[in-house]
Image (cartoon, rainbow, N blue to C red):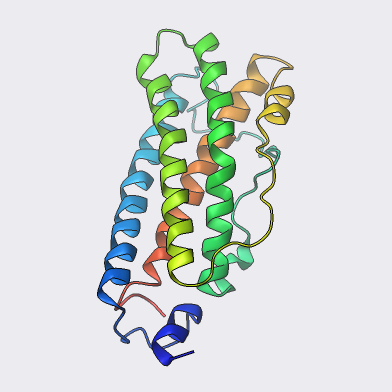
Length: 201
Protein backbone atom coordinates (compact mmCIF):
# COMPACT_ATOMS: atom_id res chain seq x y z
CA UNK A 1 0.00 0.00 0.00
CA UNK A 2 1.33 3.43 -0.89
CA UNK A 3 1.93 6.22 1.64
CA UNK A 4 -1.00 8.10 0.12
CA UNK A 5 -3.36 5.19 0.66
CA UNK A 6 -1.98 4.45 4.13
CA UNK A 7 -2.60 8.00 5.31
CA UNK A 8 -6.33 7.39 5.08
CA UNK A 9 -6.13 4.39 7.39
CA UNK A 10 -3.93 6.01 10.05
CA UNK A 11 -5.26 9.14 11.75
CA UNK A 12 -1.73 9.91 12.95
CA UNK A 13 -0.34 10.01 9.41
CA UNK A 14 0.78 13.24 7.76
CA UNK A 15 -2.45 15.12 6.98
CA UNK A 16 -0.67 17.18 4.34
CA UNK A 17 -0.56 14.26 1.94
CA UNK A 18 -2.80 15.15 -0.99
CA UNK A 19 -5.79 12.95 -1.75
CA UNK A 20 -6.87 11.96 -5.20
CA UNK A 21 -9.10 14.79 -6.51
CA UNK A 22 -12.27 12.72 -6.87
CA UNK A 23 -11.82 11.12 -3.45
CA UNK A 24 -11.14 14.46 -1.80
CA UNK A 25 -14.30 15.84 -3.41
CA UNK A 26 -16.33 12.88 -2.07
CA UNK A 27 -14.94 13.44 1.43
CA UNK A 28 -15.73 17.16 1.33
CA UNK A 29 -19.26 16.52 0.04
CA UNK A 30 -19.98 13.93 2.74
CA UNK A 31 -18.49 16.15 5.46
CA UNK A 32 -20.61 19.09 4.30
CA UNK A 33 -23.73 16.93 4.44
CA UNK A 34 -22.87 15.79 7.98
CA UNK A 35 -22.26 19.40 9.03
CA UNK A 36 -25.65 20.51 7.66
CA UNK A 37 -27.52 17.60 9.22
CA UNK A 38 -25.88 18.23 12.59
CA UNK A 39 -27.47 21.69 12.58
CA UNK A 40 -30.83 20.20 11.63
CA UNK A 41 -30.50 17.65 14.43
CA UNK A 42 -29.98 20.42 16.98
CA UNK A 43 -33.13 22.16 15.73
CA UNK A 44 -35.07 18.90 15.90
CA UNK A 45 -34.02 18.27 19.49
CA UNK A 46 -34.93 21.80 20.56
CA UNK A 47 -38.36 21.62 18.95
CA UNK A 48 -39.01 18.17 20.39
CA UNK A 49 -38.28 19.40 23.92
CA UNK A 50 -40.45 22.50 23.49
CA UNK A 51 -43.49 20.45 22.51
CA UNK A 52 -43.39 17.85 25.29
CA UNK A 53 -44.61 20.12 28.10
CA UNK A 54 -43.39 20.09 31.70
CA UNK A 55 -41.01 18.90 33.01
CA UNK A 56 -39.26 18.75 29.64
CA UNK A 57 -37.31 21.91 28.99
CA UNK A 58 -37.14 22.97 32.63
CA UNK A 59 -33.58 23.79 33.75
CA UNK A 60 -33.99 21.50 36.76
CA UNK A 61 -35.18 18.52 34.71
CA UNK A 62 -32.65 15.71 34.42
CA UNK A 63 -34.17 12.97 32.26
CA UNK A 64 -33.03 9.40 32.80
CA UNK A 65 -30.58 8.17 30.18
CA UNK A 66 -32.51 5.02 29.41
CA UNK A 67 -30.91 2.50 27.06
CA UNK A 68 -32.23 2.40 23.50
CA UNK A 69 -32.38 -1.04 21.92
CA UNK A 70 -29.77 -1.43 19.20
CA UNK A 71 -28.09 1.95 19.72
CA UNK A 72 -25.89 3.61 22.31
CA UNK A 73 -24.02 6.89 22.54
CA UNK A 74 -20.49 7.09 21.10
CA UNK A 75 -18.12 5.45 23.57
CA UNK A 76 -15.37 7.51 25.23
CA UNK A 77 -12.85 5.26 23.45
CA UNK A 78 -14.31 6.18 20.04
CA UNK A 79 -11.86 9.04 19.46
CA UNK A 80 -8.86 6.75 19.97
CA UNK A 81 -9.82 4.34 17.18
CA UNK A 82 -8.41 4.51 13.64
CA UNK A 83 -10.52 6.81 11.49
CA UNK A 84 -11.89 4.03 9.29
CA UNK A 85 -13.06 2.09 12.37
CA UNK A 86 -14.80 5.21 13.67
CA UNK A 87 -16.55 5.67 10.35
CA UNK A 88 -17.73 2.06 10.41
CA UNK A 89 -19.29 2.69 13.82
CA UNK A 90 -20.82 5.92 12.51
CA UNK A 91 -22.34 4.09 9.55
CA UNK A 92 -23.78 1.38 11.81
CA UNK A 93 -25.37 3.98 14.09
CA UNK A 94 -26.81 5.88 11.14
CA UNK A 95 -28.34 2.62 9.88
CA UNK A 96 -29.97 1.99 13.27
CA UNK A 97 -31.45 5.49 13.63
CA UNK A 98 -34.17 5.63 10.91
CA UNK A 99 -36.48 2.94 12.40
CA UNK A 100 -36.06 4.48 15.84
CA UNK A 101 -36.92 7.93 14.52
CA UNK A 102 -39.98 6.44 12.81
CA UNK A 103 -41.15 4.99 16.15
CA UNK A 104 -40.77 8.45 17.72
CA UNK A 105 -42.68 10.04 14.84
CA UNK A 106 -45.58 7.61 15.28
CA UNK A 107 -45.77 8.34 19.00
CA UNK A 108 -45.65 12.08 18.42
CA UNK A 109 -48.41 11.79 15.82
CA UNK A 110 -50.60 10.54 18.69
CA UNK A 111 -49.27 12.83 21.41
CA UNK A 112 -48.85 16.02 19.35
CA UNK A 113 -51.08 15.66 16.29
CA UNK A 114 -51.14 19.46 15.89
CA UNK A 115 -47.36 19.68 15.50
CA UNK A 116 -46.93 18.99 11.78
CA UNK A 117 -43.50 20.63 11.64
CA UNK A 118 -42.10 18.28 14.30
CA UNK A 119 -43.60 15.27 12.55
CA UNK A 120 -42.10 16.42 9.25
CA UNK A 121 -38.71 16.97 10.85
CA UNK A 122 -38.74 13.48 12.35
CA UNK A 123 -39.64 12.01 8.97
CA UNK A 124 -36.92 14.07 7.29
CA UNK A 125 -34.40 13.02 9.95
CA UNK A 126 -34.97 9.35 9.21
CA UNK A 127 -34.46 9.95 5.51
CA UNK A 128 -31.39 12.11 6.09
CA UNK A 129 -29.80 9.51 8.38
CA UNK A 130 -30.20 6.93 5.62
CA UNK A 131 -28.67 9.30 3.07
CA UNK A 132 -25.66 10.13 5.23
CA UNK A 133 -25.19 6.49 6.19
CA UNK A 134 -25.15 5.51 2.52
CA UNK A 135 -22.65 8.30 1.80
CA UNK A 136 -20.35 7.12 4.59
CA UNK A 137 -20.61 3.52 3.36
CA UNK A 138 -19.73 4.66 -0.17
CA UNK A 139 -16.77 6.59 1.17
CA UNK A 140 -15.55 3.59 3.14
CA UNK A 141 -15.79 1.50 -0.02
CA UNK A 142 -13.79 4.12 -1.93
CA UNK A 143 -11.13 3.97 0.81
CA UNK A 144 -11.03 0.18 0.62
CA UNK A 145 -12.41 -0.10 4.16
CA UNK A 146 -16.02 -1.14 3.57
CA UNK A 147 -18.01 -2.83 6.31
CA UNK A 148 -17.83 -6.62 6.29
CA UNK A 149 -20.32 -9.12 7.62
CA UNK A 150 -24.12 -9.03 8.04
CA UNK A 151 -25.76 -5.98 9.55
CA UNK A 152 -28.00 -6.34 12.57
CA UNK A 153 -31.74 -6.06 12.08
CA UNK A 154 -33.20 -2.60 12.87
CA UNK A 155 -34.53 -2.41 16.45
CA UNK A 156 -37.82 -0.63 15.68
CA UNK A 157 -40.12 -3.29 17.13
CA UNK A 158 -38.15 -3.47 20.39
CA UNK A 159 -38.12 0.30 20.72
CA UNK A 160 -41.87 0.41 20.13
CA UNK A 161 -42.51 -2.19 22.83
CA UNK A 162 -40.23 -0.42 25.31
CA UNK A 163 -42.18 2.82 24.93
CA UNK A 164 -45.67 1.32 25.14
CA UNK A 165 -45.88 1.56 28.95
CA UNK A 166 -47.21 5.12 28.94
CA UNK A 167 -46.99 8.68 27.71
CA UNK A 168 -44.01 9.74 29.80
CA UNK A 169 -41.81 6.76 28.82
CA UNK A 170 -42.68 7.40 25.17
CA UNK A 171 -41.62 11.02 25.52
CA UNK A 172 -38.38 10.00 27.27
CA UNK A 173 -37.64 7.51 24.48
CA UNK A 174 -38.17 10.25 21.89
CA UNK A 175 -35.87 12.61 23.77
CA UNK A 176 -33.21 9.93 23.96
CA UNK A 177 -33.47 9.04 20.28
CA UNK A 178 -33.32 12.68 19.19
CA UNK A 179 -30.31 13.19 21.44
CA UNK A 180 -28.54 10.14 20.02
CA UNK A 181 -29.31 11.34 16.51
CA UNK A 182 -27.57 14.64 17.27
CA UNK A 183 -24.63 12.93 18.99
CA UNK A 184 -23.94 10.53 16.14
CA UNK A 185 -24.27 13.20 13.46
CA UNK A 186 -21.83 15.41 15.34
CA UNK A 187 -19.45 12.48 15.78
CA UNK A 188 -19.71 11.58 12.09
CA UNK A 189 -18.97 15.17 11.12
CA UNK A 190 -15.87 15.16 13.33
CA UNK A 191 -14.65 11.82 12.04
CA UNK A 192 -15.06 12.89 8.42
CA UNK A 193 -13.13 16.04 9.25
CA UNK A 194 -10.14 13.83 10.09
CA UNK A 195 -9.94 12.88 6.41
CA UNK A 196 -9.92 16.43 5.07
CA UNK A 197 -6.56 17.82 3.98
CA UNK A 198 -5.33 20.07 6.75
CA UNK A 199 -7.71 18.46 9.26
CA UNK A 200 -6.59 17.43 12.74
CA UNK A 201 -4.28 14.48 12.89
